[in-house]
Amino acid sequence: MTNDRTVDAVIVGAGIAGLYQLYRLRELGLSTRVFETGDDVGGTWYWNRYPGARCDVESLSYSYSFSPELEQEWEWTERYPAQPEILRYVSHVADRFDLRKDVTFRTRVVSTVYDDSTGRWRVDTDSGETVDAQYLIMATGCLSRSKDIDIPGRERFQGPTYHTAHWPHEGVDFTGMRVGLVGTGSSGVQSIPIIAAQAAELTVFQRTPAYSLAARNRPLEPSEIDAMKAEYRQWREKQRTSGFGVPVPEATESALAVSEAERNAKYEAGWQEGTLVSILAGYTDTLADAAANDTAAEFVRQKIRERVTDPDIAETLSPRSYPFGTKRPCLDTGYYETFNEPHVHLVDLRKTPLAEATERGLRTSERDYEFDVLVFATGFDAMTGALNAIDIRGRGGVLLREKWAEGPRTYLGLAVSGFPNLFTITGPSSPSVLSNMVVSIEQHVEWITDCIVELRERGIATIEATTEAEDEWAEHVEEVGNMTLYPTADSWYMGSNVPGKPRMFMAYIGGVGAYRERCDAIAANGYEGFRLEERVLSSAS
Ligand code: FAD
Ligand code: NAP
Image (cartoon, rainbow, N blue to C red):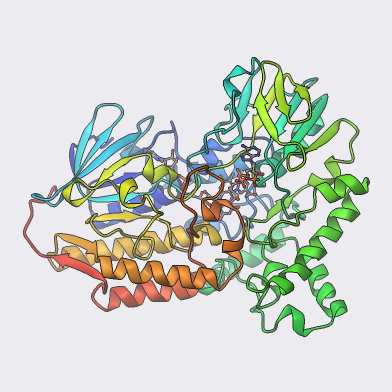
């Protein structure tokens, strides 16, 4: 195991991003240390062990592409893999490439300070260890820091409470229990049917209903696995050049340019296909025009009405306050049907807001509810939470979270002005969460790796985004975002799920393929928008 105190690179996080970055830097011969809070690899798939946790990008696409051998030898069992299978996969990758030996587990990075005089980063951990590195790569995840449970008096409840993102490794047996569950985003939508199947009573507290589509999950046939393996390389290329990191036929017309019957036939085909984007990507303007969007939204609401027996419950479950796709849609297995069960109850917090937690349960503006156990599926301080939780000090001791007090600013979501040699994998203002994230992770890791190769070949000690490039990028990201309906919703994409967080669209909707081209062009033009400094520094290796 590496335990050097002076290294070429420190990577924070050992999820899909951190592990691949380690693999790449090791290939270059860089001495690298990875710090990870958890006690094993996997990131998202290590922490989110709630019942029903599952990927909603297909397994054959939600996987690393960097090793054709890995691609050929791994056998996925389901169309949409469940958390244990993805965790096994990531663990297999760590074993296969012998990655764990450079990861220090159970160790949180608490502060990092850039030293102007040496051009190096000092990294401090909660174990008291301090490491000095030339490059600091944050692989801390977009959805790794759970949101504080902002329910008054939550500590008063005397029974056990669980957050979906910190689920006990041994699982939870809800048999015979009265369960209260808050939150109906993807984590709630996935866990509700499974918890309902065990619990004596399940009461779901819903503030904003989700648009959820039937996943149509199923075991994979050996023949389809073989077919994919035969053409994997071409498929990966299509992923990289696509809009969302998932190849779909390109839409050519407005939803409003066709008849209702034609439109609904297309939506029905998308519905039958059961993917996140099959309805969203059907027309050019679904995410850009409110009237076009409403045709798709209404189609999904109709499906909810078909799936839920009681029309009042169906209406409560039907989203009407924001356009389809502007909060992340969900894929579900039996979600709406669960509300047809007599022991499952739905509380509409828009009508009777949650007031507080009590010793025995939850209190709304209307009444008290008693539970044996509470489950919070209340989400994340997304995009910036994990980065802002670390004291990251750049030039002149400036704190990153203070620089970002009005919202995150980056160049390409990869770098931040004033923070030389700091890279953020899937950082704010990159496509990240608007894509199949493995594709975006690989793109960032490869760009960072190529950048480091070039810096070293040219004897350049530091690379730093200029404020001009950062400003231009921020303007571009905002402009493209404003051409869509995303900013009209209160979502975690906008930071509006966390009280007090600045409201800003934090991802880049320009498309995975176009974004990749732009990043590559910037590198090819000698790292346009970056300042490269050639002073000679002492190297760790
Ligand atoms: P993460 O997996 O979040 O890993 C980051 C790691 O950094 C964590 O292990 C964390 O402990 C560690 N860390 C953070 N801060 C510190 C610190 N200060 N010190 C030390 N360690 C630290 N994406 C998709 O594309 N498709 C999906 O279907 C999908 N499903 C998802 C389901 C769930 C339940 C969640 C929460 C997210 C999902 N995502 C999905 C997004 C998912 O996060 C990414 O796909 C991907 O796993 C992110 O990998 P990562 O390595 O970038 O970050
Ligand atoms: P989320 O989408 O942010 O959902 C959180 C839910 O909790 C929302 O319904 C929210 O209501 C509710 N909530 C939060 N605070 C509340 C409060 N104080 N009182 C009442 N309700 C409250 O979080 P998530 O479900 O964990 O998902 C986050 C993201 O992770 C997803 O969008 C997705 O990107 C990823 N994910 C993916 C999958 C998958 O299927 N592959 C599964 C899980 C997660 P409001 O909407 O009103 O704020």
